[in-house]
Image 1 (cartoon, rainbow, N blue to C red):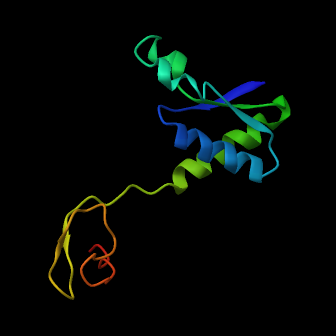
Image 2 (cartoon, rainbow, N blue to C red; image 1 turned 60 degrees about the vertical axis):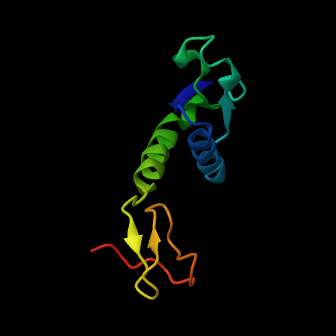
Image 3 (cartoon, rainbow, N blue to C red; image 1 turned 180 degrees about the vertical axis):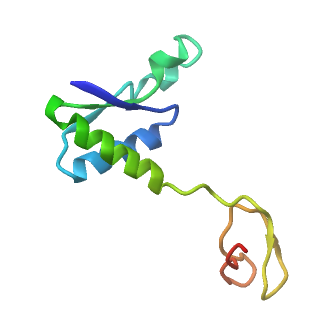
Length: 107
């Protein structure tokens, strides 16, 4: 087994593992349940890690992880106002809760 990815966040490790498995690369997550030990153990010892089972898959896994990481888009956290009803919204929302209109595209 070879470690190919680690993250502070379990959802990122799950995303990478699932992407690898969808491409036929056997992968598992280690330290999945160690988050409860954060503060008791060193931080690097409790981080979720993605390991591949077949060493021959290292190059393919590395390329796929890079592609998956590049694919992730940052969230636009800029506050916005609905163009239909002028309701103000925090940047994490993409739909107006007042009238249901979609957030306008960023300039």
